[in-house]
Image (cartoon, rainbow, N blue to C red; front, side, top):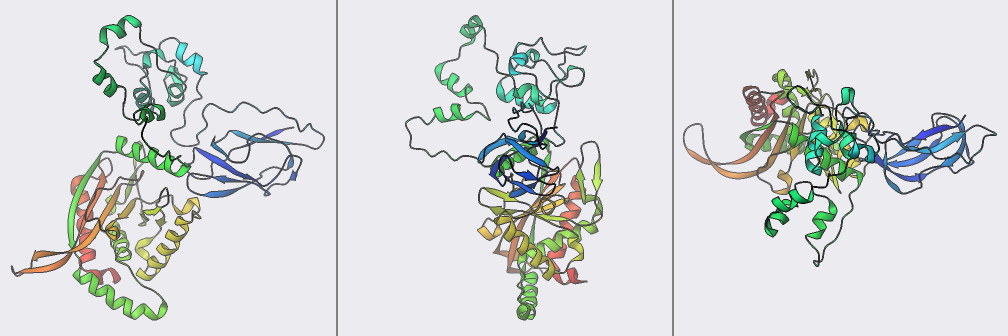
Length: 432
């Protein structure tokens, strides 16, 4: 019996991928565990193994095809004696294996010509929040869309397959805006390529095609800013004691080829602070909060076309030199896109350090489901008032803690940031 080989989900955030290279051809015999193809995900290029044995009867998706949805058939595996000319089955309308996956969409014609969506007693249309947002971006009238979810609820796939309704000629004539107003209203947030490109007709431009990573980064950051109630806490930390302690340790570690960075101390300080303020070591899980026991700290790493956020697990238990070595390894493999999914999934807290680029302060966007992210600026010399009231000069670093208010309240966030500051200003205590 013919078996479909489906586009796999090779990372937790993967919704679609590029079939970079086939490692088999039609007619080849394969066994479970044999390599079939190389798949470019939103994070890396990974090899895809067979889970069944058989003969590659037909390849449905050619090498180099981009935007192949997860769970879309990409090849057909047949048994000996079966025809290799198996017709390609139609791909599913929606096949995203994550918490946002919803029911399949009807055909676009059915979606646009369907009877009005069911309404509650007070005229409320039943639709998911994601479906409402997509409908608003596309200018769709939810009342004209048939829902395919439970009890006729409108879901993501319904609005993605629908087209905007044409306005009645009379209404358009009555409400036509002035030319300048029309141009402004025709460019909503999230406008498509054609609408944006039209604005730059006659100008010299370059189109940059989005790869899987950039599409994922854009989608996740949009989701984070639209759905997470951020608030921000700001503190400054004096670095003179830390810099002196770091120089002393590096002198002792020089023979071992270890050189500690300020970022290594920041990772350790955050990990210990999460232990000192355990209620802040938590993530949002939809209808509840999950509190973590270990300090699993994620660190943003910039790469060409996007970023990775690898996670240093059990960071509170590791020495500074161990954290330094692990961070160098993770950052190096992130830049070459060689990280495995388990290395950039998880954690309750993240660090984004732009101080190395001279940025003095900024606000970072929370990486869901993390409860907070620390934005770290550059250390700069500033005048300070010393404990005895005299004036002096110190190396001062600005930090901003972006907090998910659903997980961490203001006072709790302040306690966490205070613990981080105390660890950095008393670095010797981090070795206790």
